[in-house]
Amino acid sequence: MIGVLVIIFVLGYVAIALEQVIHIDKGATALLMAAILWSLLAIFFPKVAGGAVLEQLGTVCSTVVFLFGAMTVVTLVDDHGGFVFVSRFLNGNHKKRLLWGLSFLTFFMSAALDNMTTTIIMLAILNKLVDSKIEKLWYASMIVVAANAGGAWSPIGDVTTIMLWVQGNITASSVVSKLLLPSIVALLVPLVIVTLFIKNGKLGFSKPTGTISKLEMDRVRYPDVTDLERKIISVLGIGGLIFVPVFRSITGLAPFMGIVLVTGVVWAATEIIYEGKRFRRDKNIREVRVPNVISHIDLGSLMFFFGILMSVGVLEEAGALQSAAKFLDLHMHNIPLIAGTIGIFSSVIDNVPLVAASIGMYPLSDPAIVQAGSYLSNFLLNGEFWQLIAYCAGVGGSLLIIGSAAGVVAMGTEKISFIWYLKHITWTAFLGYIAGMAVYLLI
Image (cartoon, rainbow, N blue to C red; front, side):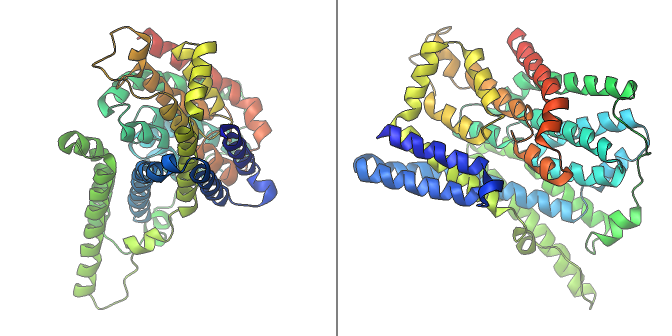
């Protein structure tokens, strides 16, 4: 029976990978796969499925609620021009400075927000600054690398680190302190290589970078709010997202409750701002409130995450993941090798189910029964395995353009071909990936 479940799971993945060929949205495929897998589990193992489905639902929904709240807050801040300061800071004609500025701003913004949203924002800024097609390919590719590296060292920077944090496998302070330097190295290596290419004139740069019109950025796109009101919304939104780890440490509640608090605060603030304008002035106000923002949230991606995580839950309940863990232990029995292999697979298979599978394959060890220095100590809270999984699954997604949500966004927006990325970026990202792992193991 386990074999049948695995075959259905693999077929579902193939359908997701061939989304553009079969013309069926990956969210629909993921939901169908989850429903079929749980139905089969319920038919053949009714005692297991009955309680397990509710337990898995609670775990998965905590992640989905967190993502939904974070996407709402970020979109609200962006719609009010909260990220205009980024485009102003980067505006200029120095190509190397622009490359490094885009990369490091993406790196740190991805840690505070998430890699997919950060990529969307930075690509929008890139299109205001650069005209050349070939330049955009290189800049956009480095944005992808930076976004994935930046998301790996923050508990809220990537869906996978959110999952590990929500599940209690890592703590915020540990993942930041242990993975910041390896993640910087993973970005620096490809960044230096691409910079050398610019120095040698191999990127085909010809046209100067463009300029951003303040009128275009501040008066046309954004609603009728003052600079002070825009700053208030930005501080509450971005500051609130950064505050979420602090909220968890203070209250002990799951992170999704922190994001619920932040969403409520930002929502209330925008309501007060717009109602105040209506009270003071009898005119039509061009406004952006949370109900309008929610309508633009990518619910398809959330449904995909839900479906894929629930599908992995079936494999966990059926014992397939435990069998896979035994196979890896038997043939590798080496934590860096296992985590590194999972990271490489994350460039082919979406890193969300891979991390979900890792959590299911290796239960969190009990410190009361695990001896220091033993193999099982790698699976304690903040153990080496969980930290390496956070790094490898995040940074490994940069090895191929289809390996991460950030890459898929850039591929669609900037028309980056799979072959072009494979030829020019994959090997540099791989060198950074290995170098970052080496730094982690050394420290």
